Image (tube, rainbow, N blue to C red; front, side):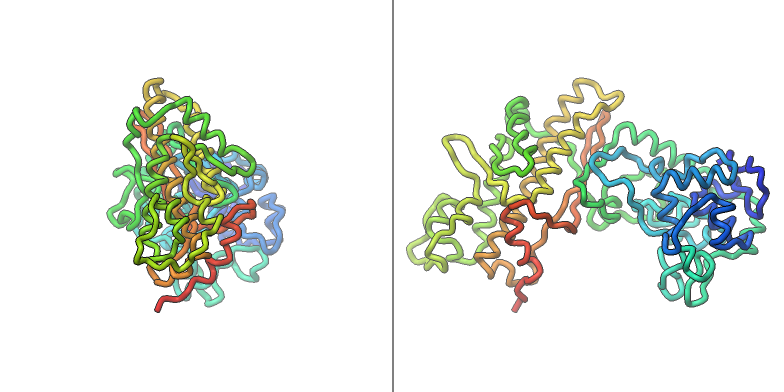
Length: 457
């Protein structure tokens, strides 16, 4: 941020070296409040054309052209710390990037007119140098703060009268907060290093949730505070590869190509996926209430007919239910992908493409080693989403499946962080699916049921 100290236009609070790595919104906030500027001055002082209801933090965090215009108006070399991308310790593959979380702030920092993008990171819950919880709303009434030019009150004030910024204390600030510069330098160096070998894999249009990101990113010990307790549901870490005897690299890759169809229908199951899918089918069949499957359906699911004393609740077989387990043709298995939500098929493809991205310093031997790791993750993700799909469809025919509170129908979307270096690892987290698309699949026909789950007795 040294470029900020060369600003020729002198305004109160323009010594940005006192607030290291200040965000673009932090600069706007500090200058606006300490110089008693209003929304009519945004264009002349900051070169900003904004609507009255635009969230100023969101606008500056997601719009490179607005950040450039603001830097030009202030006669600054555009600070790289204004760009949220440099704070991410990963590259993004198939992840919506023009999204930012609501303003998060440290009460002690914002009092001095200081906001930094490190406070926006989901994997950081406390201010790294003050140690206090980061907040989004008013600390007094939990109401919304003024973030727009048309709010009718000063930025970062609440309708209850709470003002987060102490203009007198901000104007008297004479040196940076102790520990801030050292922490930020260490963090940015670490994030830059990680971007060379870490790739975040998502499935548009699903936006990664903050909770999922907080599970995936692992801060080194030097950047963690004691107050930052581990997540109660950490992401699953994959480090072990599948045994080589379960892999057929060329054949597996050929079969996985079936997922790249516009609307995938059938997947010629690779060998490494066969046992997992068979286990899913058997587990679900054995947890169904007795008699839920007709004799013919039971044969498809368990390979056995019903016991003589078991009265089937549904004597007639359903072609839909019979099509759910993998279809056996000789020693080959084929999975009906209508029982897997399209978001899962896309994720498996995106993950495969991410593993093919060139990573500087990754030796050829390690590149081959990561294939087994990739296949292990793909198998587990497919099995999880296959299980969810089976339950979603079976619930139409077996209403008792969700008669209890503990068995609730839920579809999830995977998010993965792959580290491809000398110690390859993949972390995978799942979040509730927010977008249900019509891909002419069986899940679409069952989607309405997810909102009408029977109540438990």
